[in-house]
Length: 75
Image (cartoon, rainbow, N blue to C red; front, top):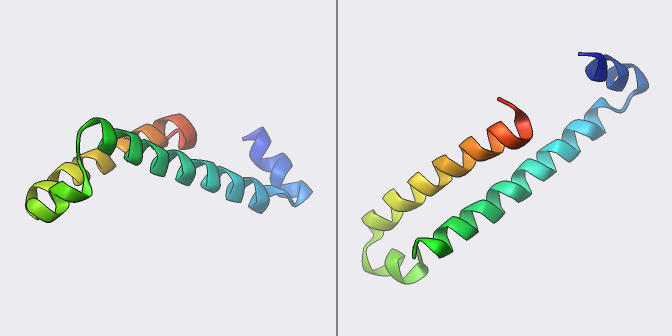
C-alpha cells in the first residue's frame, strides 16, 4: 500500500505497472516455450493432431498463467 501511494504521488505508477506487465508477459511466453519444448508439443503435432495440440497447449498456458500470477503479479 505504501509503495502504491508513493508511486501514485510521484507520477511513476503507470511506468511501474508497464514494467511489471512487460516482465509478466516475457516470463509467460518464455515458460510456454520451455514447457512446450520439454513436453514435445511441436508444430508437427499441431499439423498431425490439431485437437491434441490445442488441448496440450491449453494446459501449458494455464499452468504458465498460474506461475506468472503467483510469481510476478501475486494474485
